[in-house]
Length: 438
Image (cartoon, rainbow, N blue to C red; front, side, top):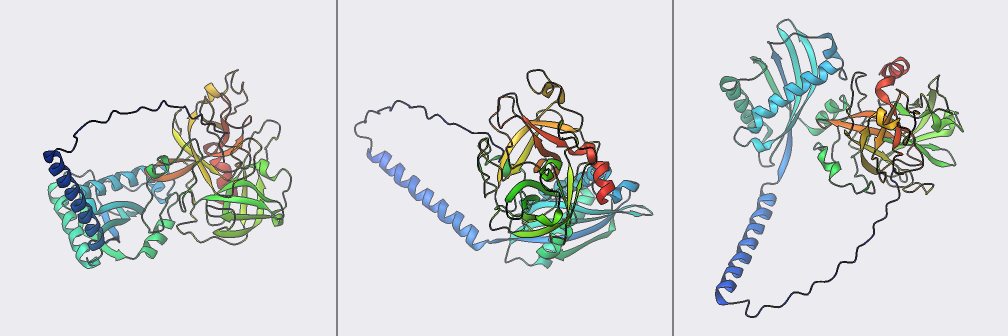
């Protein structure tokens, strides 16, 4: 995708010959060694048995309760508002505190606030709680344990929010219901076993952006293809019918009937495919300066959200990412300048670069406008490339992913002092809302 060509020079290390010691295996060492081996085998058997016997299973609950020491704000009704996000995080942190430090707290996976609604005495909260317990346990038994831990905390802990105890209800739900509830929230990645994929799992596997994405890792990634000519650009799913991409992708062809959108980690075979109904380019897109390089495409039929297809969150227009923030770019583009596109989705971790730095004479010499965002590394190497255009640059805030950039332009791929330039999504929140209502 976006990665510049990467050369690894294998240094030739001199081989070191170790002297062989005489008489290593004296009786005491032999006895200790045997004991160690027996212990290791014992532990291994123990671990295996533990996992086989205690085959853990996910249990999901819908929790509903009133919080009486805060007042409802109108923006709580909007999931992408800063107020909703901040309040949700506070509630989720509190739940984590309640369950993580209780006995058997390792059983708690995470919680997600689904909805905040007004109540005459405060705010009503609806959230999903996820636990892992041995599959031999019953949902009913676990529900009692969870309630006990919670009521205990209400008595003993100083919690930031006052939960009205009689209002608290807990309902066991299956993974399908949980999925549907979370689908109403954006930017959440799930593995095929319906366990949330933490942000850290992505960082661990990237080497100069060559590493391939796992199924469900970037579920908002789209491949935009011209019928007969194949993959042209990336795009991001922002609702069940709308895609956000770059305006320059439609330079050759703006006829929606000629375009299709596919989802999944490979171009062929795609996990899901849709036709395009409508293409909206930004009215002030300038090809010469790359300004306002943003476009929307609407699918003819909606997609169903799943572990493989999910929308990304759009950031609140007030969000400012400081320089050196870790962000991810993904795409099917070439791995070297002018190389072929890749059938398998690739990802790279890059860092945001301040506009002041990016506009230096030795970098992009004043070409970066407020609607653009630079990301990459000043030494080059990791970058987006041809075929990644229109694709997502995402940022993770507590395991919820936000679309902060759209792959737009750059000089070649991965050159020093020529980082990738992205359309800055926060600048276009009002434009997106005016066209789509999102």
